[in-house]
Length: 304
Ligand code: UTP
Image (tube, rainbow, N blue to C red):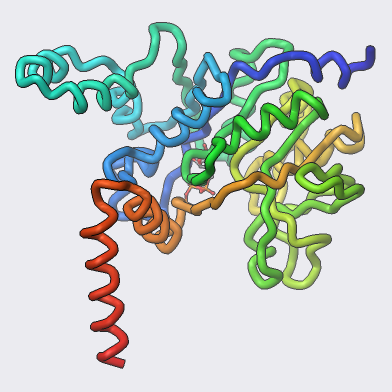
């Protein structure tokens, strides 16, 4: 069995969460609050990412953090006083909600990226915590609403393909230059095999409209590629470049068209859209919230 065949049979049990970015688009809030702690309805972004990883069978969670992100570590700690207070008051539902934030001892690891040298560099920082098996990377600011969680869909598809897999979605041509874009070798429907990847192509020069978003399943050799890369587009170490190199080495890179809706919660407009969508999806809020939105739109339209 070849290199790719061996990886094909290994399960994905570790995920890296790169959360060391500066989050400048949300300043001044991110001066003291990590972006990943910002709240969608009643849960921080990181909770959505962790829930998605758990659903996909991830057992080990590796956070690449930076200065000023200690709120993230506290978030996943146990809170005995709060739990006792809720138990005394008989607030079982809140107790259960709180328990979803608890992590088993040893299941979660934190390490620091000392300078924000890019997503690729952040992933590389976790190299010593990985075994010789494929691993997932989740960017918590890409929040995906889906019936079957996105990473779970990918793990299922990856069991068939092996190799490296990136989540992909169609974007309008005038937005392509904001993404990493796939050059498609063969389109097999939900899975495409990839012959090239371009990070932020100039307007009109994109090889397709299929954009990479923040979910990946990668082979360990990506770490070797990251090691060799100095700087790519924008002076940062780009994860996309390391994956693109893998096309030459193994030819085993796939895009996966997930079923679901992705929200770019790293941008203000995306975060607001996600707030509306996730608010409306919550049964206990739906009626009141949609009535408010209807009234607001009616007032706005009347004023125009
Ligand atoms: P972004 O491109 O969204 O950058 O990073 P950012 O710093 O978080 O936010 P802005 O652009 O300043 O507003 C994408 C993902 O990569 C991580 C981020 O934490 C985010 O999850 N990242 C980025 C790192 O971990 N380290 C870096 O050096 C850069």
